[in-house]
Length: 129
Image (tube, rainbow, N blue to C red):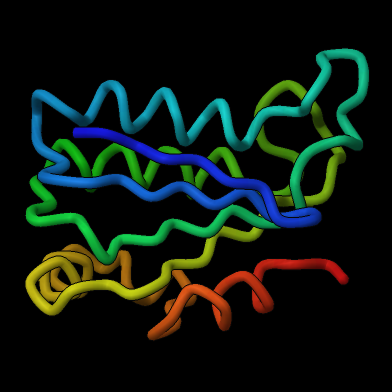
């Protein structure tokens, strides 16, 4: 699995490509947590406003990938992690393929995450601007 990253204003966009399975989940999780971290350890206010996951090229999402996503949702909540009191990072999904959406719904994660049909709408929803 490859993961492209882009920053637009106060939003970070991650675009994983391929399956997010037990082999890819550790890398996916590491990229999620890196995207949620402050740009500098001494500047917790530099956390992005939003994280958009463009899932258009994800071919499979297994329980290992779901676990990584759930941990990122917990980390993104306000006051989570070591930067207590910081505002949360809004995680928004974009262009979720039908089979991946079904997995998210079955796991109950679809109810926790805002989702948009296209990337532009997701970036607008995730931004503080």
